[in-house]
Structures are given as C-alpha cells and as structure tokens.
Length: 155
Image (tube, rainbow, N blue to C red; front, side, top):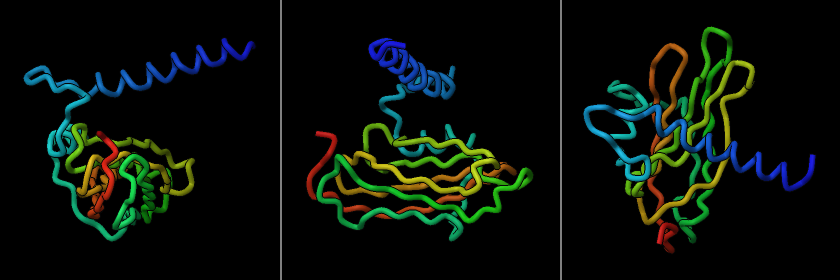
C-alpha cells in the first residue's frame, strides 16, 4: 500500500466516523445541528431523557486553570469491575458553554479491562467540564469540574 493511499483511506474513515454519530442523534421533531448542540440537549440525546446521578466512582481530572483553552488535558477513570455483566459502556465529555457541548464520546467493552482514558479538549472560555458515564445496566453517572480558561481556544 502506498503512503498516499493509506492517508486517503484514513481521511475517508475519519469523515465517516465523524458523520455517522451525528446522524444517529437526529430528532425528527426538532432537527439539531451537530455543530450547535447545547449542554442539556446533548445530555438528553445521550441519556434518552434519564437523569444522571453524581457519583464518586467517576474520577474526572482537569486543571482548575487552563492557560490555553485550545489544549485542555482531561482524564477520566471510572471505578468499575469491567466484567461481562457489569461494565462501563461509554464515557462522554461535555463542555458547559462551547457552541457544541459534546467534546468526545468513548465507547468501551468488558474486554477493555479498565474504564479510563485521557485526551485534550478545546474550551472557548471558563466553564464546567462534565464526564457522563453510561453503565451496562442503563444507569448514568456524572462528575463535573469548573475550568478557568485564561486564553480562549474557540476564537
């Protein structure tokens, strides 16, 4: 496989991956642009209207002060046995004030062994960052932390 072919296929796969999740959250009654989803709309789309419970099982690590909103480190770890009958299905990171509240969605299986991931997100200003965790039994847990951004990332 040529290098150019590899990057063409990688770009196509990335485009499909970006489009399909946005299509799956479409609502026939009220279309919502995937680029303009507010916080509560995002939570409802993920939970199906269920109310998530704050939990100490969800450990969200973000800096209290981010010098640059374009690259804010986020780590989420969930205390879960990760067995076939009791595991974390998904971890969603949401921002309170970005034009699109959904920053990242990570889907897990019991084979992952540990419910944990780290990434960097973009924040347009000082706001709350929320980890929304979906368990295999349909329950939703949440943890939130405020981040003060000194230089905006979504300018």
